[in-house]
Image 1: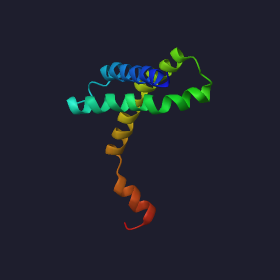
Image 2: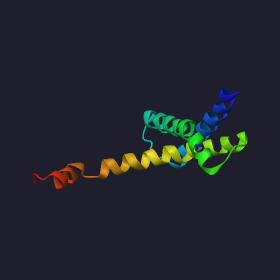
Image 3: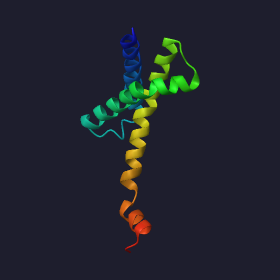
Image 4: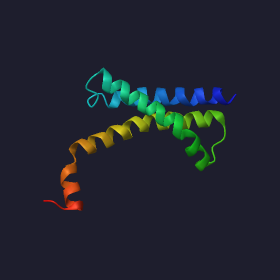
Length: 102
């Protein structure tokens, strides 16, 4: 029965990531970026839903699947935003300022 609930969470996260990819279509330049976005969202849902549901005391399986959907939706978006921030940051300047050398 536990794997049945995980399947619902994963499916909810996958659908959430698929729907979120519509609003990120400008950022998803090719098929590879789109696949990574969807897999990232579904993975966030699969691995974080239990923790988030426990934190908020959500125990009904249909509501847990809803949490998975939301985590799938925001998981892909969050990773895309982190990736964009890393690409635009001048990491070498940050490292040099922390450890000296220029």
